[in-house]
Image 1 (cartoon, rainbow, N blue to C red):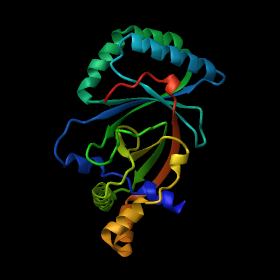
Image 2 (tube, rainbow, N blue to C red; image 1 turned 45 degrees about the vertical axis):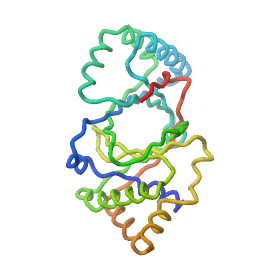
Image 3 (cartoon, one colour; image 1 turned 60 degrees about the vertical axis):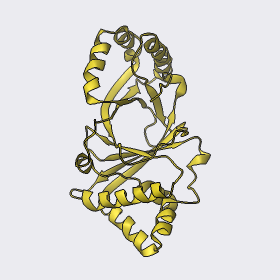
Image 4 (cartoon, rainbow, N blue to C red; image 1 turned 135 degrees about the horizontal axis):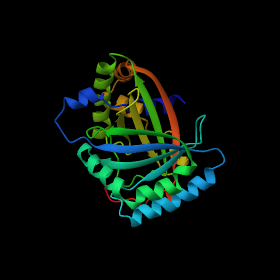
Length: 253
């Protein structure tokens, strides 16, 4: 458990305020909906969603919506329906398309009657930090949500930037990415892809070992991790499964 904790916790990114100080780039977003079916409507919801995704493909939806369901946690009833990647300026055009499309009518007639509750958020993707390999197979994803202490960004951010540089310089062969929830209580989400459950085993060369070897000092490595942890208030980890049957075909990019 200690190795897994170190593997997860060192991948937090700089806060969005720090990112904003870097070279200006267009904001890249993931659009995410959370739906909870009505009790007893789960099978009808999935059946309707499958047909609706097919309808959207034929209706030339410019986005590719992917569905994820939780396999850990206290509430396994929700479905996360996510599309990536877009920009703020493209959201107006997409909303206009959906308002006039046949997909809107089809959704409200077929899927909506089975939904008890909705949630929605945008996630700003960190474009500088992270490493998502071309051969990543996210059949499962581990998602860690970090809450940050008030005023805790500085040391944590500096530590993460240093750790990230070390991982990339040493060609650490795993994928990870992080994003900032636009709404809600803020914080940071870290996503790690896994091909299967076996891939979730803590690797032999953990982040901590890479950092310690690079710095040639256990004391320096421990100090770097201590700086990182100093800004974290709490964290929560969940595993989600990619539901390909419920999703649209994935588009390049």
